[in-house]
Image (cartoon, rainbow, N blue to C red; front, side, top):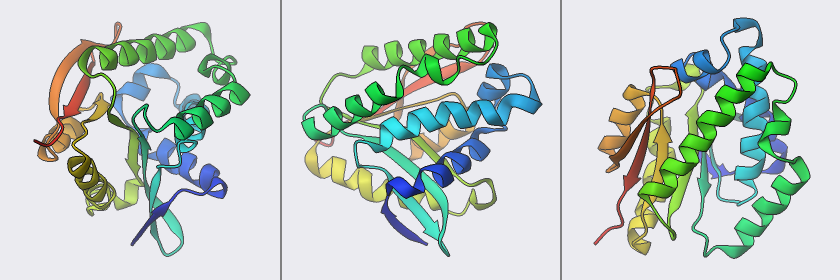
Length: 209
């Protein structure tokens, strides 16, 4: 397994891998209850998110025999001006996230946009610039449990420690939450996701002393 930077030609493969990784999660079962349309919904959501996230040029991929088996989309601190300008330009070209899901029923749009707004407001409550963010990380379903995520995270987290910068992530999965605790993240906030009964965990890995 090799770790390398994302290239624009990786976009379709990375989006499909992430969509497959998140397909069985409770959050997306709540967002799109129809199994027939859930994968398409995931593809549309993550095509937008990955396109914007990779514009920062900090996304790293785990590759095995030429296949992408993991991806970590890192967002740098606001002090990385060039990366943020590139992401803003990409978002301007794509339009708002709402346009990526405008063909879905109104209740689906409201669930997703309501969740995403809650996620961003919670983030802004627990951390302020400068900080890194992991948005998102995913591993191909058939490669989970094989330390792919560890390979994607440890080197980058060591860089953050050396720079004495914190890192933020959000998760809506208790199993993932517990894994992130082992990497030094702590839960700073819990928010109920609308009427889902699910919690969104805002987690921060504090800057090294």
